[in-house]
Image (cartoon, rainbow, N blue to C red; front, side, top):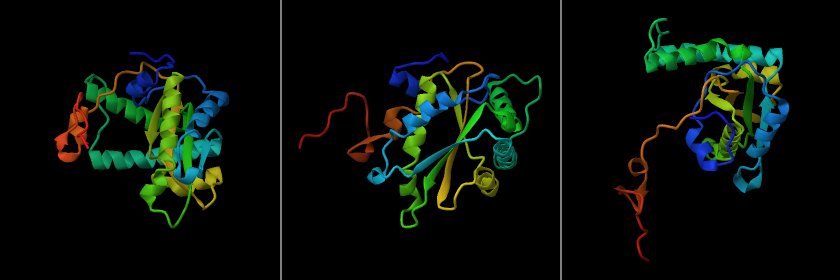
Length: 219
């Protein structure tokens, strides 16, 4: 496991785990600008690049983060029936839950946060519109990992859109698409745990798993 920078895109993709604990160390605007530059290299429908990225640093922005995090935590606790773990509980589940609660509790003091916005196009279905912002968001996350940063994608803006719009002066013509918390990891990046390819991919037919070494059918 490593939290060091990497120029290997395969290592970056396979170790970009969600990070919820960060060191008490600021993330400079130059570093964030570099990650945002990577975001702008992403594809978008018709190359329209209908995106805008807001780095949240002001007291007003951080208050919106705190409000959004508190509301999101209430939903998480209710829907997933999560409870704060006992202090002496050191199981993996308890450690993960503790990190999640700590992130939400300390939302106003996270190292950095970036809100991803996409220009609204009423004639474009939401799923299609998302295809012009989420690749940019993924580029941002991978660039952050390459630089040794940790990230956590959250939905704190979803139930608190008025507060976010007011704090950041976001025009009505723009949708709030995603929010990423960014900082220098407290701990390490590590290998991702994902289902194997043959369980999630098919070759020509849905009922035919795609496996390593498979060859395409002859024309």
